[in-house]
Amino acid sequence: MDLSWVIAGTIVQSLLAYVLFFMVAVGFSAIGTSHRPTPLDYTVLNSAIYVLPACCVMSAILGILFYHFGASKMAYLWYVMPLAFTAAYFGYIWFFIEKKV
Image (cartoon, rainbow, N blue to C red; front, side, top):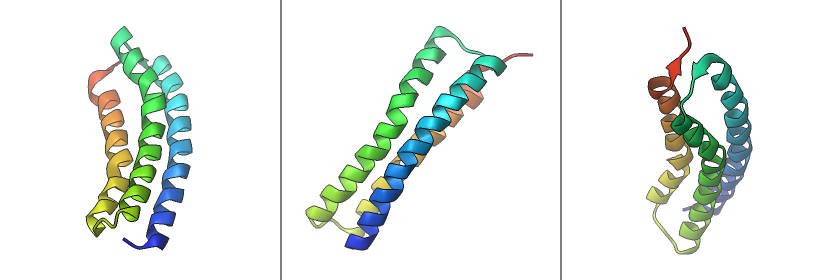
């Protein structure tokens, strides 16, 4: 792992945490007006406002730790973890929350 890529990945992950926080906050209000969320949906969406940014922070910390311990280039894949969680968030909204007619 190269130090410059670890620094760049950490900066991108910290910026992505802010973007995901605001995306979930704004998206939550949009879902409330255009869909029919159940109490379980509200629980999932409320937890997403904390889980998605925390996933970015965790990914950045893991990248730094793997660099410190001399991991291979496969450790860069941890930077993709927040994108997988974001895709799961959008998938949940798209497939499981009933839309208003």
